[in-house]
Each structure stands twice: as C-alpha cells, then as structure tokens.
Image 1: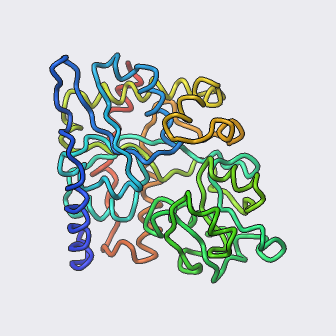
Image 2: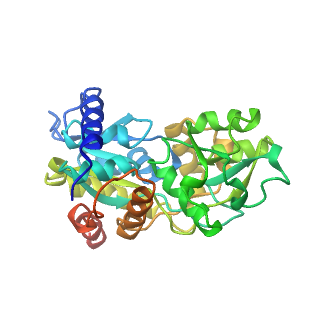
Image 3: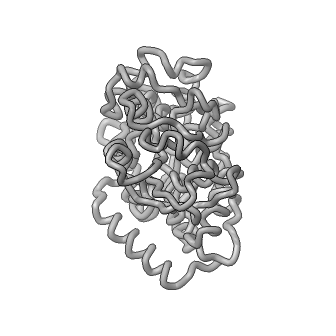
Length: 335
C-alpha cells in the first residue's frame, strides 16, 4: 500500500515536528522500581478509564507511574509515539494516523475508548446547529453548502463522526463547508454566525444548549467510535504494556451500569478535564466496552470516509490485522 509522495512528505514533516516537542523517556524504569509510562491524551470524558485508573491507584497497583501530556489532537502524538517519545496515546484516530501506519511507522491500536450511546435525547456528542437557524435547518439534509465546524478538520476523528451523521441524509463531507475549529471556540462561532453547525463533544454540548446558543440536530449512531488507545511499537513489546491495559480495564468496570455518573467518577473527571462538575452532572455519558477491545469495523469505516474525501490517497485500505492488536484486551479479561 503506497501513500501519495507529496502527501507522504507532508506527513513525515508533521511527524518530525511533533516529535520534537515531547521529551519523555518511553517506558523507563524509575529508581523506586516502578515503570514510568508517558501518555499523550486529549482532555475529554471520552477517556474516563484512563483518568479513573490514575485517580483510584490502579496504575500504582500495577507498578506504573503515569505521566500525562495533554495534546490538542491525536495526530499531534502520532510522531512522538512512533519515535518512542510517548508510550501510549489516548485520542481520536485521524486520516494522518492511517497514512503514518501505511508509511511504516511502528504503532499498534490496542483498545477502544468512549462509544456513542446513539440516544438522540441523551448523547454526549452531537451535531449542534445554531438556534439562529431554527426553522431553517431542521434536518442534516438542510446543511448542504453550509459551514460545519469540526475540531481538527475533516481528517480528524470528528470528521468521521460528522460523516456518519450526514450519510443517512444522502450527504457527505464534500457537501458541506468544513471549518477547522477547536471545541472550546465552537459556542462563540455558533452564536456570532461564523459557522452554522458544529460537531461538539461533552460537556460543551450541555453548556451551549443550556445557554440557548444551539440545539442538537443529530447524534452519531449507537456504538460508533473514532477514539481509542494506541501503543508505540516499543512499548507494546515491553513488560509494562499488559499491566497498563489491565489497569484500564479495571477502571472500565467502574464505569458500567450507570456508575459513570457516580459522584466519585464525576469528581475525578472534573479535575482531570478542567470542566465544571455541575455541567458534568447534567451531561449524558459515553459508554465503554468492559474489556476496552479495539473496534476494527469502525477503523475500516473511518478509512472509507477518509479515502472518499481524498484525505487518504492510497490504492486500498490498510488491513486492520496489520495494526490492531487484541492481545491486551483478551489477556486483561482472563486476569
């Protein structure tokens, strides 16, 4: 599988530039006998298992000290992970990630994170439309030719989510004007008319709805996901990789059966993401697989969307078996 030469050069430049900003030593042992694991993460309740495992001492119990490095998008951490500057990435999957793997970078997708519940009345992520357009934009089909904000642009995880919402209306990403805008800036853009709609994640959805700026137009379908856990190849082959995943799965069990809305979990998430706990209380929760197993079917769909929009210019899709590893999820369940 070959990547378009010009695009490949761009990917390499991005990866090299991003790698320079990370200085952590991947998976190195500390003098205390514990192992330091550097995790690049996009601050979001999507990654609740990571925050819960850290706050409740599950990593400590596995002899692991976790060092979090916040990033704006998963693509920012692809290069550092491939070069060993970062051990783990908890973020969204992007077109650039697929192209990077196709170019030979040593990465493994080992787990999933938050999945969409698919409930139109209680979804943490939604395609929000400006209240100014009430009566004008009533269905996703009415977005044809309009400006839609997506954090990271069409090649980001949000681009895939928007595509899944537009598809039932007979539209694709090519039928709307995508505006690359950070999620914290979306409410102001919807209010001032800079964009007509935006793919917004919790808890920002709750805030803009409460303040009368926007309303949910549609939500990603049940079970859809564009985020997960990426291991650097070096870390995946090391002794701490399974223990790290065991801690994540232990935390995921604490989020099942409605317990993601417990006061204990909400307090952890508020501190980890910097969000108001009162807003989090009113925000619908994502769902997590008990074993956090990766979702190859979702990865296949993402590749299809990115290829259809020209963001991946390869002859054929990557075979998920070449970069998806179920080993850690399966072993965690056995333990």
